[in-house]
Length: 492
Image 1 (cartoon, rainbow, N blue to C red):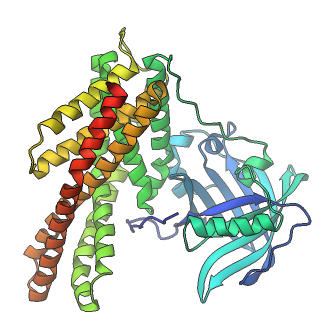
Image 2: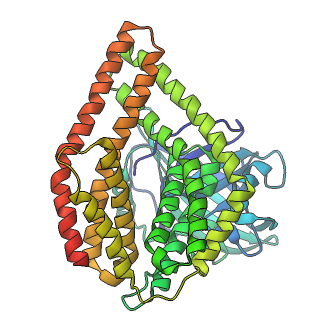
Image 3: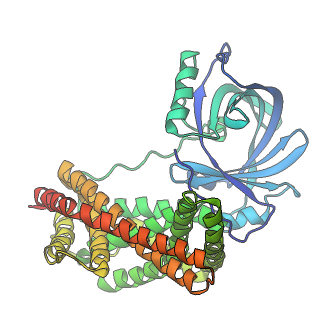
């Protein structure tokens, strides 16, 4: 898996965070590590007291909060969702109660509910630190766990964790195969905390079948996307991993697309009001996300330059980082506002009880309408379309894609194939739009540069943006044809 680029927004220096990339396996008492290159880790004791509400609100949201003691060092550790992975946040334990800095990240999940200690785990850990030269690759930990409640040990178990520090999915799975060959077996994926309390994450709700009503499909889709938004609210507030804000923004767009698709069966005043508030939230998140994309792009481009030219690019990247820090504060102000909290309340209610009107329309018919708008726009597209026209196609493609996802349960494979074709176009047109924005940033930077060499480097980079756009334009026509063909098979 690839670690997303990080930004450094203004935040407390006492908070540290990193992306957790690990895999768990079950092991028996007789398990021994195979011979691997690395350094054996000394045996150490970790004492972790987990905190949650009485109803386990954090656990149900894939969030864990614990107070950990290791070799006399005390810390508060919070694990929050980041896509399908998790991000670990750490704060020095200067107090015995969960710190306000972490509680603020969890405002949507806690509200005014009280946090309390729910279980303590004593973990004796040994293992191996794998390195390549002086570069750490992975830590393989063997954990012997004792579960304590009210001072009594109520359960014991062992498990193995592989935490990847460098590399990708293939490196992780290669280590997994070696551990399995040595006797490790499947793990159910639950954190130790879940296993200690016999908690099981709720299985994902299945998409409604072909005969389900429009309302059932609408409720299912809204529940998925609103849940995704809530999951990435803490990480967006923290601001250390750009993927958190990206996933939150995607969730907002998907909710809007679902409501737009279902508009013919929704109460007009209700859906218009909700869409306006979602539009506001999207406008809040948009500038920060766009800056994340540009910072990541220019950082990557700088690696292709020589040391002298790379130095010339540093002021531009620094300027973008300053803008990103400002944008983060705008995001935080919005996420702590009464307006945002009310929007979240309305979204949760919408997922349970959307305001619908009587209609005979099916979810397939609604999705077909979204695709017809895209098809009409594609047929009107000129041979050499303007940048604005391609951006409009990108927006309509997103809407048609999300509408098709809403109808997959009713249509099956034809809708799935349409979604795949739409995603390919959406991604490429995203590159086209990113290149336009990158050129704008370069030209703006050039206005304030007095260096001849900087002007030369900027000119090269502007030309690079032209090449990016031209490459996209050459690739588009066959993809448009494929999309129209897939749409015809799906919707007729």
